[in-house]
Structure formats: C-alpha cells, structure tokens
Length: 218
Image (tube, rainbow, N blue to C red):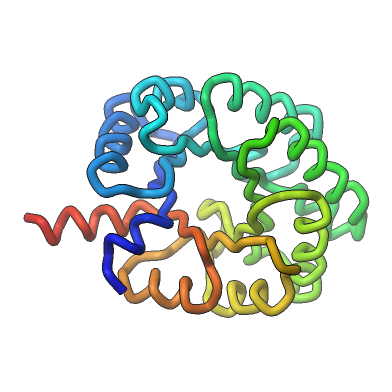
C-alpha cells in the first residue's frame, strides 16, 4: 500500500504531558505537508492548532483522557469547550470501571451525552481494549453503535497495551454496519499500518507513519 494512502487515514498525534507549543506547531506543519486525516492534540492546544491550521487539516482532541473515570458532566464540558475552541473530532475514553461493574446503561448514556455535546462533530470512543475481556469488547461494539458515535477506538496508548490486530479483527466481526474502527497505540511501521487496515481499521492513531515518511525524503 502506498504510504500516501496510509497517511490519509492517520490521526497525527502528540498527547504527551510534556508537549510544548513549538512541538504542536511542528505537528501541524507535518500534517499539512503529508496530508493526514487530522492532528490529535491535548485539549489545551486545540485553539492554537485550529487557528494555525485554519481548516486545512481537521483538529482532534481527547476527553476524559487517559483514565476515563471523570464524571459525565466533566466529559461533556470538555467536549463543548473543545468544539468551541475549534475541534472537529473528539476521542473520548469510556468509564472502564463502570463497564467492569456491568453498568452498561451508565456507559451508554455517557457516550450519548458526549455525542450530544459534540454538536455534530466526529466522535470516537476509546474502550482501552488491553483492560477488557473479549466479552466486554463485543458488548462495547453494540453500545458504541447504539450511542451514536462514529468510531470505536482500541486504546489511549497510555495504558499497559495498545492496539492489537486481534482486537481490530474482533471489532470488525462484531460492529454493526456504519460504525468505523480506529486503531491506536503501538503502530510503528508501514507493515503494521497495512495489517491494521486489512483487519478493518479505517483510521490510525500514530505519529510514526509521518516520521517514516519524513525519513524517506531525507
């Protein structure tokens, strides 16, 4: 697969706690140069990225990140603020503890509330697959779809594991038609990216593909 085609579905990501303004600007410059799907930045940098990019590349940010155990009200506030600051896409983390409790209604209602707060923007739901059983992952496929989100996403990249091909394949087997898959965390090569796409992912969260593209130009 041509690297340019892979770049088109990459969320070029920098979510480290140490991220600085110059690094965010550099991320945006790379996004413009290499034609990625979006830049994914911390909430505090959404306005900076949106004003810098001026609609030329979508701006994505995270909500309830990385642990997911803030309140629904907090997640909705974060979402509304991000949209007001120029975010085009929201990647939210579910309340994993409530899912493990078996409180599926809470999880579903929270996603629906964030969906409403998105005001029509793209919503991706991070379920942190490394912390879940296969049964819970399959359950979340239906919950995410019923809650009106656009994507189910594997991972934050900040827990004990990232995306696996097995999890993406499990999603692909169990998501209703219309729900898309984002794989994130640990995608380190073109071969990795191709595998995730072949297993069913239509969006990739990574910064490494842009780095590879830059290296090939040197």
